[in-house]
Image (cartoon, rainbow, N blue to C red; front, side):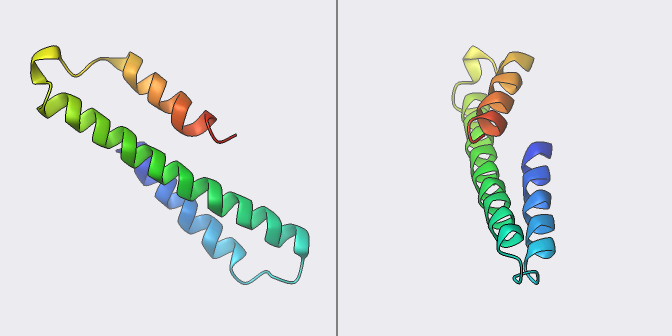
Length: 82
């Protein structure tokens, strides 16, 4: 959940920094890419959170998992879009 909040915070920061600076094409392009990455990051963490909740409540007899699942989610969410 902290990673999802961090992704939404990044989205807000990138939006606030880039919304008024349209005069430089390079800065506009960079802010567009960062905004797109932050949105994809938030969606990926929402999917990971849904997967963790599904495993915890529906598949409760198999256990929730340990830190290995968090590391896999971090790799997929942060590194998949780079």
